[in-house]
Length: 182
Image 1 (cartoon, rainbow, N blue to C red):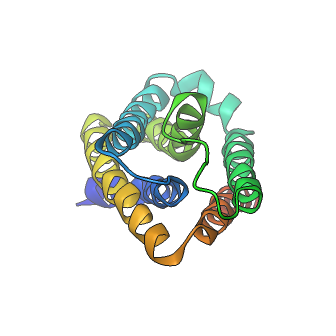
Image 2 (cartoon, rainbow, N blue to C red):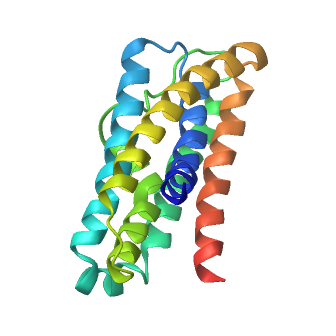
């Protein structure tokens, strides 16, 4: 039960970001859903394992600035979404966030907490593999739902939802930053 709660908690940021991604796309295809759910799920699966394996020396190094990395990545992507929502008013053209460096940045930003959880598991001598597998599956599932749901929200509420999505990404980054600073 504890593994399920940890996995679900880790998946929620990715779920929120996948909703924002769905909002920003003019039309969601199966490819979009697959790319987001695969990448988010893969990173959420891999990061706890990396954190677990590198915990001894790496944790002390990353813990000082991991929250800044997540904040900066989410703020840049959210800021770009906000800018594009005002720049492209009335247009259906926007950057596909399910490709390239943007998708990798979102995947890293939403999985940094999983890296910390993996290193914590090493320090308390708990096995991490079950939690990592659950986190990957739950994240992939919620991300697929989020992208599709974000598209439906956008269709009902219009292109202004891209501005809301960008604001949400910035808020998630700010939340991560404030949690770690205070």
